Amino acid sequence: MADLKYTRILLKVGGEALATPGGFGIDPEKVEELAHKIKRVRDMGVQVAVVAGAGNIWRGQTGMKHGMDRATADYMGMLATVLNGLALQDALERIGADTRVQTAIAMQEVAEPYIRRRAIRHLEKGRVVILAGGTGNPFFTTDTAAALRAMEIDANVMVKATKVDAIYDTDPHQDPTAKRFSHLTYLEALNLRVQVMDSTALTLCMDNNLPIIVINLWNEGSIERVVYGEDIGTLVS
Image (cartoon, rainbow, N blue to C red; front, side, top):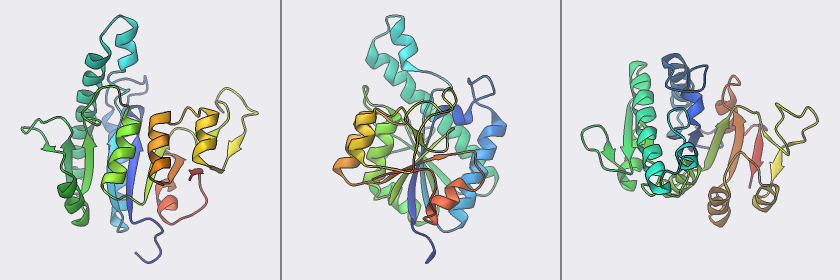
């Protein structure tokens, strides 16, 4: 524990991290790979909470483009995060990691309700806590839910795990001259309108001085390097 810079983290992953190669649905192999990454960090003595998006199952923007009510579309997305949470819980428990799923929308038959003090107690006991259902309110993204939960559970850092290794000024997959940032202030990130995280989540982190580290989830050992305090990805602080 003495060598760790961060001992309690909130890991935010997009729904695409669990998706099939086509980008939709749940790929059991990807879920299992993610579970192993999380367990390795937990086994280091780090307390890990996870918020997963739902873009692999449902994107509210798609429904809205066809005239769907925004609140309805968002509630559907929140329910989809529970599906991802249950899949990740199953994968973690099959490899020996005690896990709890807590949801912001009550559904007692499948998960615990989100209760802050109970979530913290689970973390203290070494359980991975998967926080599903967003904030329980429409009009908020899972990024904002992750920022909110990170502060509620007193996480040291929010780790935004994506498919790029840092924040760039443009999409590095499309622009080979994209500029990479190793550090940004919250205001710089807001002014750049970075695509990695929405402005509400960034502002929430800024107002509460919660550092954000953006990394590539699939780079070997990336989460471990974060908790050891190594220079990796982009730090927003």
